[in-house]
Image 1 (cartoon, rainbow, N blue to C red):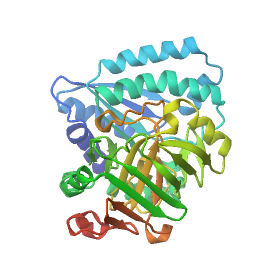
Image 2 (cartoon, one colour; image 1 turned 60 degrees about the vertical axis):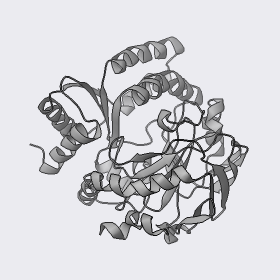
Image 3 (tube, rainbow, N blue to C red; image 1 turned 120 degrees about the horizontal axis):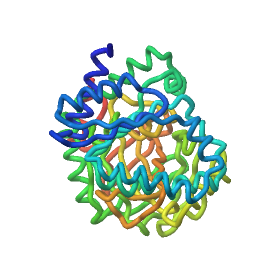
Length: 371
């Protein structure tokens, strides 16, 4: 039997995150692990009157499949999975990777084939655009190791973070949404970072437990050609199975004109997947009061309180700036004092300094308000 907090998470995902209704179909996709949550998701879906479908994938097997794959094969797979996804009303993705670096040695041409012809077709074009969806990680020994914690301690931390009061967060984010909507120019400064861009006319969205678990962010997108300056991301990340540190990007009129990291060659291979990969598709402020340090997992790290992310690649339809790409890579920078500090200005107003919101109406988003 699953413990009570697993059942609570499953019920929140079904009833709050995707708001499954009578007769609606939900695809529950599990990668590597997370079967205890999947069982509770199936039960909660039936309890809500929905129709659950389950698929299980394994990254080691996926690597073997992709190593010698070819265009016709990938197109066929994308066709099958795309047809299934198009029949769904909702999607919940449970990611519990046994080895987060499993795909790190996938050749660049195979990674590009997968990203453009399989992932984009099924997930970007159908799942993200046309279903009620939520994606989450699930605690296992591999994930705990990435966080530098024991499995038991990490599991306790995980459920504290994921089962927070998202309705309260939704209310607390409202003043920040309004401020985003009134702003034209954003200026971000910090260690090896000085970047400006416009967000005028781009829709603003709050994230409070609907699309990601854990959650906590407010996002929009830069006007595509307005980005100028440079940024040094201080949050380590894993993308397509490869670990990246010290990613530094230089922008001119919206385009990434120079990119470096611990693996500069692979970084530029990713940014050369298509034209849109060298432009930004999202700007977001991380707000989860219980996440303070990175663990090389984007779904957690992009929610770190006192962080922001500027995302190369595809823009969401809900905050669309015209940029389309097969990738969407949330690169994160943390501005708390422990990570070098920094400032974010909206027009001529200092909004956040060293990771803390300055305006009175935004202080409810600072972590001490949740203690």
